[in-house]
Length: 354
Ligand code: KG4
Ligand code: ZN
Image (cartoon, rainbow, N blue to C red; front, side, top):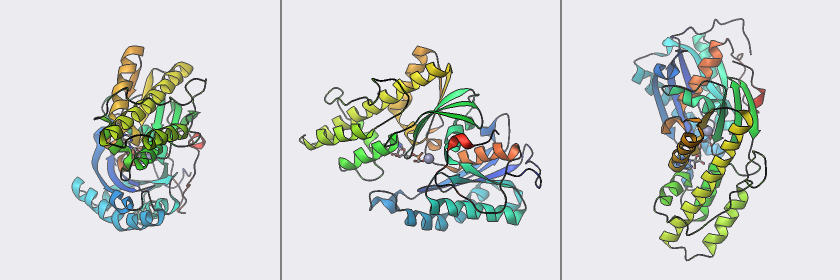
């Protein structure tokens, strides 16, 4: 991180956000408004590669990189056109620098860096999970630290204590599958196409409660870590031994969803108790799950904590959260030099304060 060459983008400066860590190309333009970050969102565009990877049952990294190459510049042009702006209006660039697929990350990082270099503006590499974690700040009445964040995506299930922006302590992590991964793998086992998470959740709406019951993994002992692979195996056995009818698939989907949601809520309550925090932020793709949102809001109303969710579009990967996290870091004078560097694995706890 350097602090000498560029001045900080002033309030009102426009930041381009680029997300290419996995299978969505996301671009956003954010006018930096420190007091109400969401109000400055000028445009956001997203291209999902789901169809491209569906035939393979999962993300094929090389195909993902090539598709980001094809889609990124048209999306940037589209976002600029939507906002009625030109590249010369940009005051800074933020791109996801990790964690994620190395090739996919390099596409966003190279394009972002090149653009910033050509325009003579600063560019900053954003931690993808910090992006998710800060996404609720794009909404009205945003949460103020300190808070606890539950980050549940395709690659991560984490409880994080947020003392301030950049001050992160991981309270619990997944020992095996992430929550979204467990959704996707379970869906795949029952014959649903990739990515099965949202589809499994939809199917669960037709399920009958109480027909199946699965474990709430690692809730009967202290600690805040997660493990979902045993639950996945339990579901597989139940499915294999069942009549495999449509109704059974929906019943199993519901019991699985209930098990995951219950487990996440038990751990959130524990994390809030352990830290004394009264605000809980939910982020990441699984944060789009309706049952999780509904039950957490109810738990908050009962226990007296407040729950903050990003809108559904900003739970899953998007450029707006990267523009926001980048704007905050650029505003505190942080940016990288001209070398293109990405971190396919990157510990959230090593970030500097913003
Ligand atoms: O945050 P995200 O878009 O990408 C990663 O950074 O991983 O999260 C994607 C994950 C996928 O595993 C997807 O199945 C899951 O979020 N997901 C859901 C729902 N919507 C997305 N899982 C359960 N219920 C949903 N409604
Ligand atoms: Zn993500």
